[in-house]
Length: 106
Image (cartoon, rainbow, N blue to C red; front, side, top):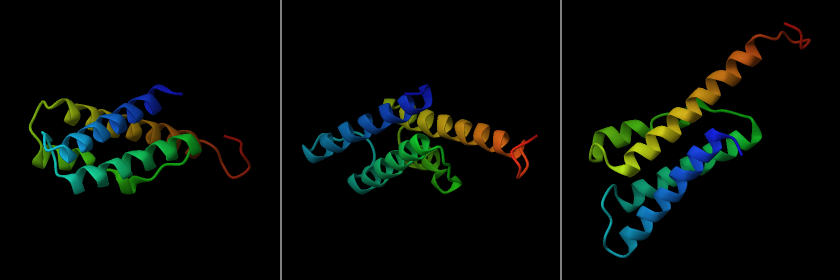
């Protein structure tokens, strides 16, 4: 597993933990529906990484964090780190694919 995949996976587990806290009445950040959506996005990002495909459509998790979650919250940091790692991986993949023409030669 790559470092990027590990970063995204860590965020998934942290979101799941927070969702469990919400179910028991002790959630500290986000709403249950927000966390559910965020988990789905992170799982999809991890799947993209495993498949070697990338989508710009998922970019924006950090906006939710910045707009509605407390600054410095551990989950905020993990989600933003996961999104940033995914974006870096997507940028690297895009740069590599654009350096080759249709015949596979640069």
